[in-house]
Image (spheres, rainbow, N blue to C red):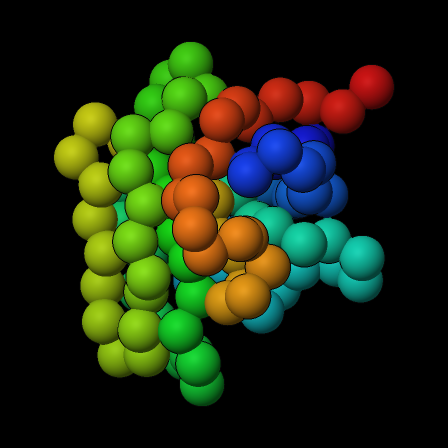
Length: 104
């Protein structure tokens, strides 16, 4: 899966099951830069540093982005998935995830 953000393509993986979704960015495979979590919200209970999260609708369009800080919860109304990026990976001047698409 590829997530396009800020004019660049990032390797992403979708979480599989409750444990992957609970661990989020911490459960990603080596070389994967972003994690796509099904649902409207994500938590930062196990985070040591903040990270960027973006809500994505059913068509893969960005509906908003926020910085998720440790011990906080972020919810995106209308989202079908949330994309998690480690802090510093997405350029800070333009916070839009343009599309989520499967890689060929």
